[in-house]
Image 1: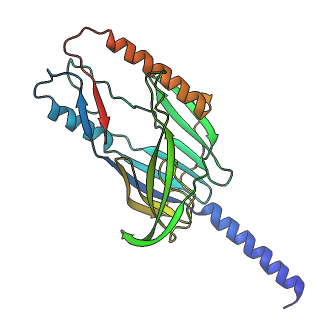
Image 2 (image 1 turned 180 degrees about the vertical axis):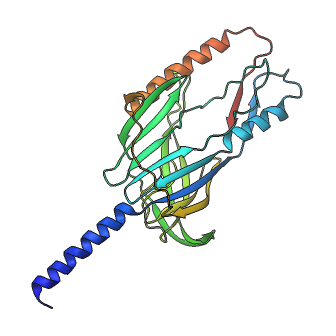
Image 3 (image 1 turned 30 degrees about the horizontal axis):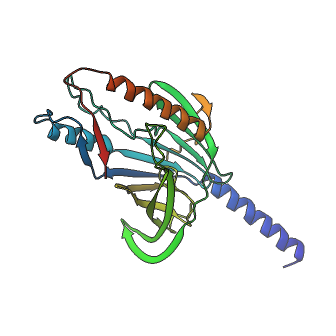
Length: 267
């Protein structure tokens, strides 16, 4: 084969590979679970604790889909019925945060998250965090996929309702199981950066487990970032959320309703 023919063959191969990469798409379904440690600030809650536990369990057991190709993805919650109400009682869950539709571009390393905060839509646009993953030799099967273990230490701001709180940052170990059989550097929520799709994650008291993967579905989805909402950075959004939570805390501290109480979730 001549040099010209070799160069031509390499060029054609690159074009075909690029075309395949653009055409490739998958959909992964994840289910979330969280262990709950409930504390209540009222001694007059009667027999409602079981009802609260059932409500919160349903709130944290959600189903998400990750639609992805080689460089882009959309992670969003599947629609479900609203959790049961507590009648006339008011429940305040500490540590709440927005987690709406999330677009990731792993090639250009940025994300756009659409989040609803007290009825107002925000578009959080920022860079993806570079994760220092430690790869391990441990393996296990998840469904039909062979997975490898990876861990990282994730530092995060301790959520503060009191600006005088100087508790600082907390560190948690994140454990991921990824499969090189699906060679995309992606995963649920903001997690990515491993040599294969992440099928299971655990951190704090939460577990996110992939229950189904469909590769190259017949009906492909256009993957593009959400566009509705006020554009802010992650830091700006965190400041707004802390301010709103402070206002809520002040409001309910002034509430003299005997049926009101507050619960805190740990784990």
